[in-house]
Structures are given as C-alpha cells and as structure tokens.
Image 1 (cartoon, rainbow, N blue to C red):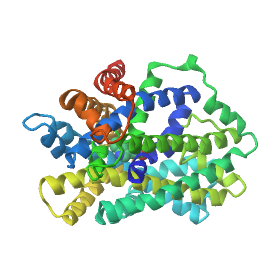
Image 2: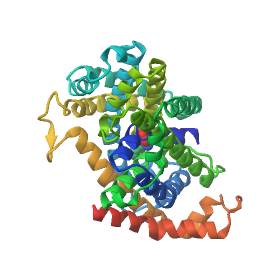
Image 3: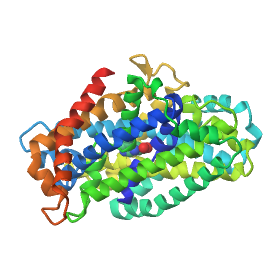
Image 4: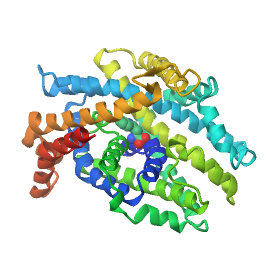
Length: 432
Ligand code: TRP
C-alpha cells in the first residue's frame, strides 16, 4: 500500500499539480480533478490491480496468462514502452530537484534571490552538462533502490519515506499558510469560478489525474503482481488514491498561498516550482530551512515514483526473458541515462533534437500523457470489464467472497469499469 502510494505521490503532485491549478484557474480545476479521480481513475485503478494480482505477472505476461491467444498483451507492451518514455523525462526533472536541493543546502537561494531566479532556472535547464550530471545522480539513487529488489528496496524505502514526506509537506504548508496575505491563495484554491471552465480544463484535469495516480502504463499491474492474494484491493487502491489526492491538495496549499502572499502570478507554468518558489524561500523568514525541507521532499517523492516506472520495465524484461535482475537494472540505467540526456539536451543545448515540432522532452510528455496513458487505460478497463467480466471482477474485489462488500457497490464499480470509464475517457480524448 505504501509503495503504491509512493508511486502515485511524486512530481505529479508537487510540480505538475500546482502549476496546472495555477494555469487553469484554481478551484474549478481542482473540482473537476476530484471528479475524475473518484469516478474514472479509481475504477481504473481497481482494474489494473485485478490484472496484476490475478496473474501475479509482469505487465505483458499478465495479459498472456489471463487471455492466452489474444492480442491483449500488446496493451502491456505499450505500457512498458510508455513507462520507459515517462521515466526518461521524469528523471530529468528529478535531477533538477537534486540540483535545487543542493543549492538550498548551500544557501544559494539567498544570493541568487529576486529577479535572477527565472534566468538561472532557464540557463540551468537548457545547459549541456550540469542537468545531465544531476540526472546521473538521481538515476543512480533509483538504481540502488531498484537493485535491492521489490521487498527490500522498493517496499522498505517507501514505508519509511512516505510518512516522512507527508510530515515535511505539512510543515511547509503551515509555514506558507501563515504568511501574511496567504488567504487570497486559499480562496483561489477553494472558491470555484466555473465560468472559466473550458474543454481544455477538463482534458488537463483528466490527464493530470491519470498521471498522478500512475495509471494506464502497467505500474499498478506490476506492483499488484507482488501483492498477496488475501490483500483487499478496494482498500489498498482507495488508500493510495486518497493519499495521492490529499498530498496534491497539501502541495497546493504549500505553494499557491505563498505565491499570492508575495504578489506573484500562479500562472507561471512549469517554472512555478523552480522559479517562483526559490524566490519565495529567499524572501521569507526561515525560508532557507523551508527550501531544504521542500526540495528534500521533492526528491523523495520523485524517487518513489520513478522506481515504480522503472520496475515496470525491469520486471517485464527480467521475468519475461528470464534475464538476471542485476543485468536488467544495469541496462535500464544506461538506456534511461541515454534517453534522458537527449530529453535534457532538447531543452536548449541541442535544440535540433525535435520531432513533430516539439522538443523531445515535451514530445515524450505529450505522447505518454495524451496517447499511451489514456489509450492504455481505456484498453485495460475494456479488458477487465468485458474480457475478464463481471464475475471475475466480483471475485477479485471480494477475494472470492471472503470480504463483505455491499452488492450495490460492486454493481456500480462493474458498471463504471464496463461502460462509464472507457466511454468517458474516449469522449474527452476525442474532444481534445
Ligand atoms: N504518479 C507519479 C507522479 O505523480 C508518476 C508516475 C509513476 C506515473 N508511475 C506512473 C505517471 C505511471 C504515469 C504513469 O509523479
């Protein structure tokens, strides 16, 4: 459960959620986001969980075991590819986190303060060597945890880190909320203005919900494959989804009110975390300490997520092709390092690395969020809803009748998995 929550809570919550809230008008976005989590993402999470736990296999073999002779394993393969693309740009941002954490420890924010932060951020991320060095450091941390394996590495790491992370974020949110003028930020977060909602808001909210809950690429299938048959799927998934959502809201409360307290704009985009925040930290009382804690939290959160993405690839290659895990970890390290470096270079140092008019970094983000994750989620729910069917869903959610779940709850979940979730996602995607 902690590992699953660890996978969900990550840069999606700390970096993506606050800037999307800021770009999409605050409370209305949050409201739509919550609807997506409850009505679309949660049933999708149950579906992935069922596939993983029932098959006890990696994301590709799972489909081969549950539906031999069909083409459904291609869904798993698509997930493995998507995980690989996501982890490549994800680790680049993880590397930025390492750099900002080190800067915070060396008290660099105070000297760089004020107007200089935007330029220093842009010149850092578009530089050639430094971001790649930080990518290397971040990826090395990943490799250590993943190398130790699922139980000793991923599970024990998440168990210790998640509560620490939670505590750190609460401390920072309290600091932010007690700044003079922070209440305007709270209002922005929780007082909805639906007149500004467009189809773009809905697409952004849904995409973010998928990303934040690690859906559609086999992360949950992979983690669930290690889960005991007696574990309660409904409880596990709901706790993970709830922690993720609460965490996103706390991150919002840590960042947006501070932005308002300093009279800055929440509409900064991806730079919000790395430009606006260092400025705030360098200007507020105890900001130096808050900065260290915040970027430490960011690294921990990112790590527990990137290891889950890596594990999709690693468990597939090591189980499916029966290759020694250490070799697979080493090869993944090299491949992600190579692809991640290209992503990083595409942000400025080598602007030629573009495809379809986007930098490689944006392209990977775009393809995974808009095509592979949504497509994967639709196909997985169709697989569970129609191929495995209602009886299997009920059997898995109640552990063959040993957990008491009211019938109407099961019926609603089945209905959503079979009809509502795939259709709703399809409609939203087509709208886009
Ligand atoms: N959910 C993580 C975050 O919020 C990132 C992540 C982990 C992810 N596994 C995933 C995103 C699978 C998409 C798909 O940072």
